[in-house]
Length: 585
Image 1 (cartoon, rainbow, N blue to C red):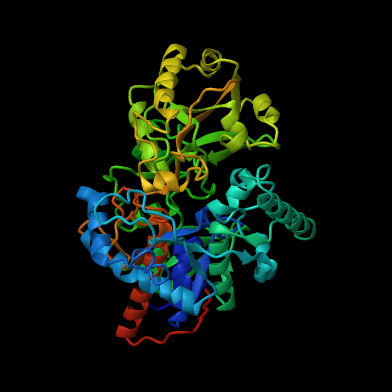
Image 2 (image 1 turned 180 degrees about the vertical axis):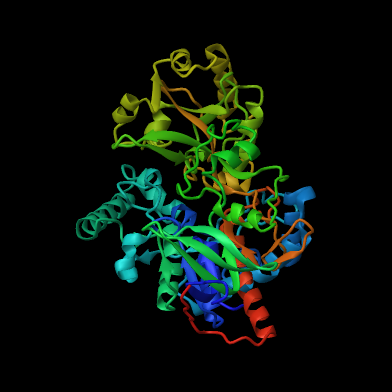
């Protein structure tokens, strides 16, 4: 490529579009392989959806937890994914993921600031299926002191407000358990007091939490490595167009904050990792059956995740996979009115698993095992509302349960419920009939549903959906509640309800690629110089959700693979690497 002929203002080896886990993994690995890299971020904050996520990676046979409770195997993982993906099992990409996932983990743990820790009790979501495991495939980022980022901490995307407590992030279900038990356990009370004092000092001196956990820690660790390697990061710099020389993608046109444009050449390739399309109303309209206008859907993803990567790929002949059974990773969410008047999104990740909380549709009927994964409940919710004008449901709890566990954004005792009742987020009725009238639910059917549920619940049984039968159900239930950590009666008034609608934890429909993370054209051939990772890349899970971390695990793996592919191609042509050339347009 002749940089002067193409009028580039700057030329590097690799341009990465997006700063989530997939993009930063590609950037770090490419730089470690001797390539010059530039990271582009559309928004003024880096970290993407990763920074708001749980920070969990699903990687079968990983070197961190593969021996817990017994060694994993690639054959078991293949069997499980065949079962989970069904007709959408993509053998080439699955094999690439299974072969390179453990290598990716080994590289980042040994050669970067990324520290990953095992989750010894975290099961696959369908561990009872052939090839499933009760633990070992999900791992997560270790907590990090935000001060390690220096001044860069100011640009790290903070965690989602709705899933923090006064700005604090929680690293595990055990840590959350201490807050649930603060009034019942001296150990928990001491733990919570220490956390609150530490957090108060952090807010006083730094203006934000410095104990970074979950996805915030993963994004921070990747970013710290990138900064240490000298990788430039341009914020407020959306990729506006791709540049081609013949069939090959050779660069990117970048928008700048001042309104100008910069042409950046990429000798070895461009990696699209812009976070999928969860905030793209038009593509949601096309691919989300429950959102006929594109607006009947709420996503906690960053506002900038508007499908830029998918459009860029399509502009040069790439194709978007549109036939997956699920175009997104579904989760029930609720609307939260923030103090400044803005609307926030609360993803229901924890409450549904607790005993005494059930979900009903507008007809007052239960429609799912509430303690199944968010994706499974989301699918059941859509099916239940197929004949309705809107996909919506209500989480129901009695007074004892809400004071013990909270309900959605409403926190358990000793925090007050009053603000949520006044805002309308939380509904309360002295009787089930009263509650149903406020919510617009069939009151007679609701009473019948709860009466039938309570018949088994008094003995810890769910006679309709067998709640608590899966290992995963019990993992997030209340282990202190026996005989079933997921089941208790809904009996002690007053009664409460929170309205939930459909949301996502990322999109599955994405750019069609091969096992080398290369973007494919309409004939299934690689487009030279163009790669995809993260949620821009079509999900390797075939529209299913096998376990915690099935977005971040493949995201980092295929970012890693993309970097290796570019380095291999560079070596094949014996091109000079490791320099940063600049030319004037």
